Length: 115
Length: 115
Image (cartoon, rainbow over all chains, first blue to last red; front, side, top):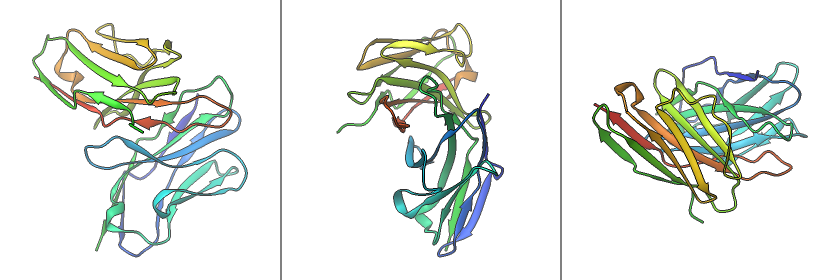
C-alpha cells in the first residue's frame, strides 16, 4: 500500500526567509509525486509534480521540490516566502504504473508566513 | 476553460434528510474522483470513476452513501439518510488519462452541515 507522511502539522516562517515543507512517501515501484496547495474555503490547486528525470522540479508561484529516491522524500521549498503563501499544503503520491490511478494524500501542513 | 464545477457550495440539512451533491468535470477528463475533507480525518478518497464506470468505491463509508456517473459530464454523490457525522467538505476532482501523470483538478467543494 502506498502512503505519504507530512511530519509537521504547521510550519512558521518569516516573510523573506526560505521555507521547507517536508514530505516522505512509500510506494511500490517508482512514484509520481505531487504538491497541492489549498487556500481557505477553496479546492486544492496543483503546484508541481515529479514524474522522472531531473530531481529538482520547479512549479507555480516560485515553489520547487526536490525528489530524493534514497530518502524517499519530496520536500517542498521556496527561497523567499511571502505572506500570501500562507495556506495548507498537501503532498501526494501514486505509482507510475498504468492501471494504478489512485492518488494518496498526506495529512497536510499548514504554512504560516508572518511579517 | 471552466474548471470542475460543484453544486451546491453550501448545504445545511437536518439529520435523516437526503443530500445530493453534484459535479461537472472538466470536458475531456475521463477520471472523476470524490473526496471528503474533515479536520479529524483529513482528505479521504470516497470513490473514483474511469469513463463513467466506478473503479474503486472502497472509501465509501457505508451504504448510506452512493455515487453515480450517468455520463461523462455529470456525477452525483448521494447521502441517504444523512447524519451529523457526515458534515464535511466534499470535493470532486477530475483528470485525463495518458502516458504521463496527470494532475488532479479540484472543484471548490460542497460544504455540508447536517444538524
